[in-house]
Amino acid sequence: MVFVTRKAHFSAAHRLFNPEFTDEENERIFDKCNNPRGHGHNYTIEVTVAGEPDPKTGYVIDLKKLGELIDDVILSKVDHKHLNYDVPELKGIIPTAENIALTFWNLLEPHIHSGKLSKIRVAESDNNFAEYRGVGY
Ligand code: NI
Image (cartoon, rainbow, N blue to C red; front, top):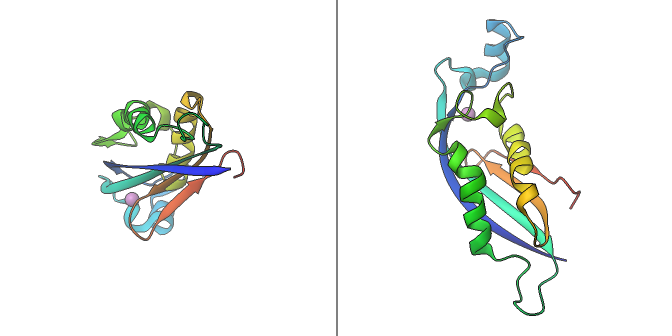
């Protein structure tokens, strides 16, 4: 199996808090990320598709087309938005990198018809990122 990856970038705001927690609990658990008016990140996402290269093209999936799909299905919904308020798919979900990766998987997976979606990695910074591997590889 061969794994191919397309990288993309977007900028968005979010606030980490759980309405079921008290203000003190939210402050203790989420610290600076609980800032009431939110804060921003320049996110990097990496989308990995697994499969065998097509004998005619040599591609697992055309990465240019994957890039267009990421633009249409994901970035158009989240770029320059507030993830807590502007994205219906994230409504009621704490927008951690973990939950963003899961949500992006659910948005994108039905559109991958060449190879299989293998991994979505969402990085909030150079130091912090989450990966979801919905098919186990
Ligand atoms: Ni944050």
